[in-house]
Length: 431
Image (cartoon, rainbow, N blue to C red; front, side):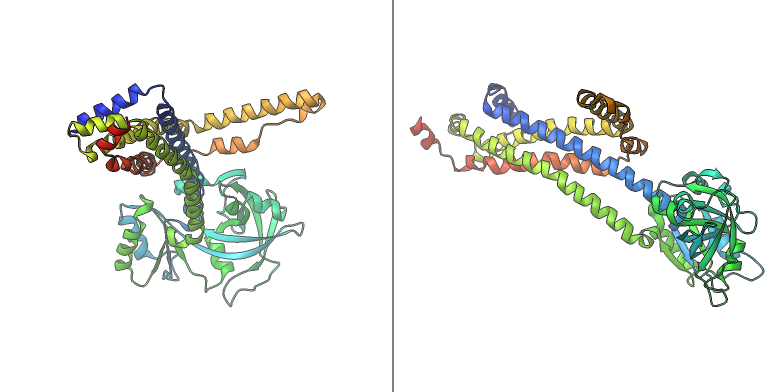
């Protein structure tokens, strides 16, 4: 039988049973798929926004797209000319930054201590690296490391060590070579700026100094590292292979391997969330299965008539499978549209939820204890969520919508297998 005939009979079954229990079950199943798809797309988009806000900060400030170590630097020059010229000639390289880094115990003028990662950068990095400048927001002072013994520190690091703009802080304990004292009270730096990023760990542990100060205080054994940023962050593996062929003595590491544990934890969190939300589709599939079994039983007279007129059991079964497919389509398509709409307008949604939560709390407080009404405040977490732009990936949207359709399709197929066991004579005899 043709698809057109199967679709026609399937629609006739649905229309005739418009007020029956099977129709109610089908409607509820479509709504379940719709809300499941909508919820999963919205939640995954928000989580992608959270994760990529962290990832962008880490790649722009900490790991870069590619880290290049063991660079050979002539004494009379700051940078490796051969590698620098190679990066300048590469169109896929957006920027590259030489730097030193070391771990330190920072002591403020009031004696408070805090652990920090000290990065020694060229003084022009803030104005020449757009990605770095975008992620590093100055909340006090300026990003000024042009003069010796200037330092720019994170907002949380400044709070922990009690440092303010213009204060002196001491890099009391500093990792370095054998020619550097492990402890010293003479590594004094003046705070010229305090920055803030979207990643709390960087705010709490990062500080920037001039690259010449890095050479001076980190010792002769300190390794110069190049942070290379590409136009396409996902092209790092192929570019590392090209770089390695040109510079076999250098060590190249991508942002994926450098932050493997952190990004692995994010991926596990995302996968677990998807599994939990996918359980919605399992519940919907069970609902469809039970509804389709009921429908097959209710339609046994029609099935026997179709069989008597020459319909094959497989073709008759495909009628119910088609109905399950249409149930999945009618749920997935609106779910995708609603999910995309909520994701695009997520800031408005969270602001609305913030207002609703505030007025609901205020209403109940005013009913129970009006004197405490002035203490009711909006939940700041809603404002935080509203400030994070969600990221929508086409592959994930397609996967979620297809899973919604397949859950309905598979449930209908399994439930309608009873058609193959039904005989015309048995049904006619009972009737």
